[in-house]
Length: 138
Length: 138
Length: 138
Image (tube, rainbow over all chains, first blue to last red; front, side, top):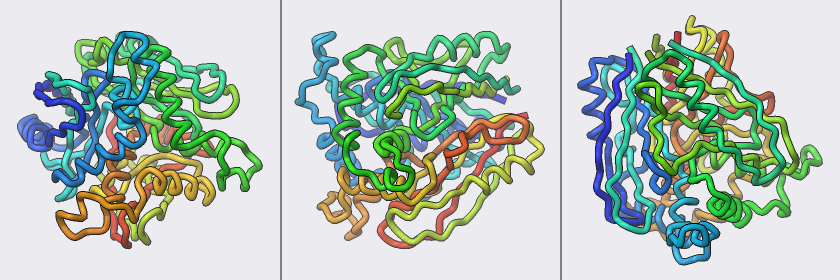
């Protein structure tokens, strides 16, 4: 069985993290699929999905790491193409990845207590984001 | 239902990116599986799969990031083992990851317009690569 | 069909890598599911899963890369919250990711010869880790 769900999230620009754990949990619980995988996928190439302990310090630390290895104000070849300013967004998003697959059993995600699913905005401006939650199981 | 497909890609060495979106799209469309997930997996430990806006600037930016954090000409312990020169390839590939899972519905991948699936060669020489596209759904 | 398996792994602290390929292979072989995907998921936010050639040099190289971009002894905002010392663990784990999905066919994982599935401990102390292996297929 497969259940496809979409959710929109309004973000506030680069580094803005959204905890979508509850959204995904409720979709799984309501799917009448007992066990399987929930794939959380961000549509677009300047945002990403991962897990982290969702507290402001850890989010700030992750953003600082990205600022070190892919500074927002550096020169990017991508800027030359479109006149964009979001080269840092593209490389950060490609590195972190758009997709996360989480197993569940008995209708519950098998996450750790301090492990949340986040959507991380990496674009340089606020965006309306769409995530797809694809539930596959039996 | 499950459909397993393999495709070969000839690459030109470190940093060579191949857009495999159409390949995956056609496999999904021809699978007679309406909705589910397509997992794109690279066989081998010196290449990786992710999504990015497939234009030369963004690809160059991603490769530059890798060159900064894992320079090709640095010393690697892995070189001591085999006399290889591809330590940078292994760490870049492990970081980016070999697997990408993309949801689809109504026979279509749920990607963004500017979001392509790429195979990124990270080895220091041209390779014949095999990717597996595993379609799971109903 | 879905089969959910859990395994515990005792780790020795930051940088300790465990090859779990055989564990996953045996679970897939014994599942009576011929083809599908095996998702390997680490429960918790300070460890990660990826593939790499499992030899000490490549593991050391990967750990060195993490030490460069997220040094263990740097200041992290996360430390201010809990008095923890594992800010480096959280950002490394978020970057590498908790989940890996590997296709299999005829009961065999479609990995390369030199491509192993690893659990990488990133916390600053030894941990008892739980991984979930979720097998989905037919």
